[in-house]
Length: 86
Image (cartoon, rainbow, N blue to C red):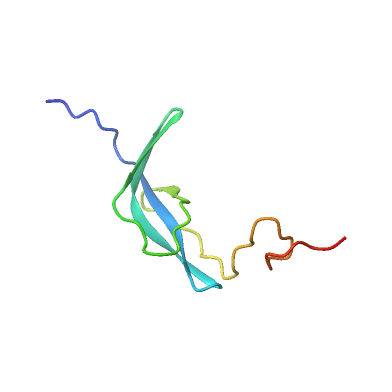
């Protein structure tokens, strides 16, 4: 039988938030990119704090430094979650 699965050329990472101010990149699987098609194979997911965001990096590449500020909530310009008054 011929193996038709694409070669996995990338590592999948997700950002897991630790509290409201710190996060860390976790390796959660692998993937490959073939033309206009992306294949992602997830081996694990973080418990709590998973936003669904997956970042693919070439194998051997380190993820960027995790942000140290809390994520901004949608609709809030200052990150508090409340709309600013005009």
